Length: 406
Ligand SMILES: Nc1nc2c(ncn2[C@@H]2O[C@H](COP(=O)(O)OP(=O)(O)OP(=O)(O)O)[C@@H](O)[C@H]2O)c(=O)[nH]1
Ligand SMILES: [Mg+2]
Image (tube, rainbow, N blue to C red; front, top):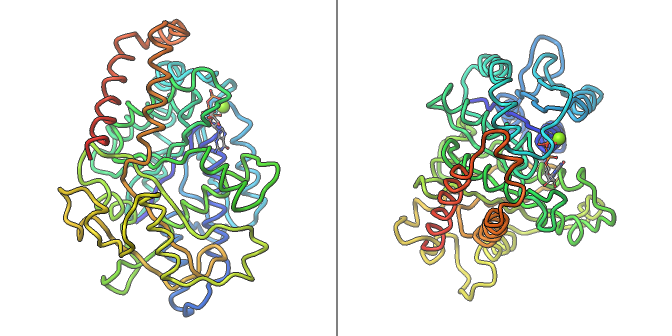
């Protein structure tokens, strides 16, 4: 099955481009110890999921690019074309002349309704190019105006137009010491709206990825490009083909469905996090050896984060909430194929309390601003009223309380 990716705003388009580059270069790159046949079916499966091959042209990403300003999109289009290995389709982007000025309400109330038809037509066309549509992956930041506001609007349109398709929103959590003063407002509005229309939110925190760049990859002057490459690597590690452990011999045909089915058993809990190991500077890769038990132990340790627990396997019931059977709570996927130059690597997607603190902090800061009515007129002038804010706070307070009680 194929996934249609919708890249929204500066962040969404930059990360989307990096994701398709990573998928393509992994697919073309070293296949490690796996057989030729295995490698071939890995490549075919990756193509079916993310790329569309027309005649003799290089594969085209199954993607729609949306931004309210042209610069980032035109960069993405030309960088992809100049790679020579993949490209974006020539009529799969939509942009305007001026961004949403970090104003969620501008993206959601103005740009959304105004451009709904044009954007949804692009999405529809991309969906029709898929033999079998497995769902949608949207990529956006939650702190700006376009990715967050227009992104929330487009997600609702996707839900209406494709009521039975899976929708996974990849969301970038802003730096704690953010560059946008109203980022907490925008974040609260984005999260609460997505919570109603999306199947799940896969969250990457800029602060966390920044740390990986600094501490594990030893990058001195960290750019968005560096951060995005780590994010793309992590996303690729989840979305590239893998076999269900104990399942049949073929690669899974329904990547989004498989992921969401096991990870989102309850509508109150839709926040997903992603960890990937090992991660190291490319130059040290050839000199590293890893063993599976070591990697998995490390990954598990990351999951329980400092909790005092005996080592064991992922089957340990104490890792999970009591209302889930441990067999249903954990699903493993494997492939002998190397991933992105790593002969062995492991990724863990989890639905856990990892966002509780950051969420509480963002809601708290937004609430304090709201209580003093700071910047509210910038939202009300586009049609987001105080009651709308209150509804959003209520939604997120409920999410916080659900996760707290897990
Ligand atoms: N990881 C990552 N974060 C980014 C990138 N670009 C922007 N951000 C983050 O995204 C937020 C700003 O949102 P943008 O995506 O720039 O905004 P936009 O969607 O283009 O909306 P407007 O510019 O207001 O129209 C901030 O939290 C930034 O830290 C990127 O390439 N990678
Ligand atoms: Mg922008």
